[in-house]
Length: 227
Image (cartoon, rainbow, N blue to C red; front, side):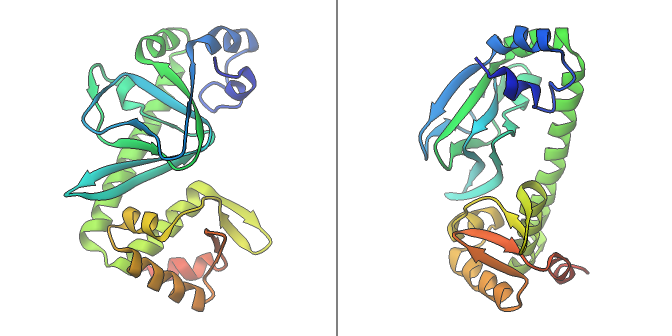
C-alpha cells in the first residue's frame, strides 16, 4: 500500500482530501527491485502504472542491437501510463532500474476505479503522456539530423530541466550517469561523449563531480546550439 504522506504530495492527488487519500492508498502495490532489474519489456502486454518511491529507472528501446535510452525517471516520477490509458496496450519500450528502487504499482482496473472518484486525474496523466510523446519526437529528430556535439549539449539541457538543482556552483544534474549511458541517450559512442564532455569542461561550461554534471554556464551551453 502506498504511503498516504507520499500520495498527498504527488501532483495528481494533491487536490484530494485526507479521507479520499486514505481510501485510495490500498489500491497501490509496493514492489522492490534491485539495481539492474527489469520492470517490463518492450512488446509485452502491460496493465500497470508505476510511481517511483525511491530509486532511478531508465526507459529504453533496443534498436538493431543498440540500446537507446528514451528517458530517466527518479523519486516522485511515474511511468507506464499508456498501459492504463489504453486497454490491452503493448509496451512501446522497456524499463530497468539504475539503482535499487521501490515502486508503487497501480493496476488498470484500479486506475479506472480511481478515475470514477476523481476524473481530473485522467486529464493530468493525459497531459503528461502527450508532453512525453512530444519529447520523444524531438529526440527522434535529434538522432536523425543533429551532429553528436549538439545532441549531447541538448541532452544536458534536458537533464537540467528535469533533474537540475541549484547549488553554489550552478545547476547540479542530480543523477549519476556513466559516459556509456549518456552515449545511449544520444545515439553516439562512449568515446565521443568523453571527448565532448572534456571540451565543455575546458570551456568552463560544465564540471563533473562524482559522475554528476554541474552546469557552470547555462547560457553558454544554450549558445552552442543556437542556429
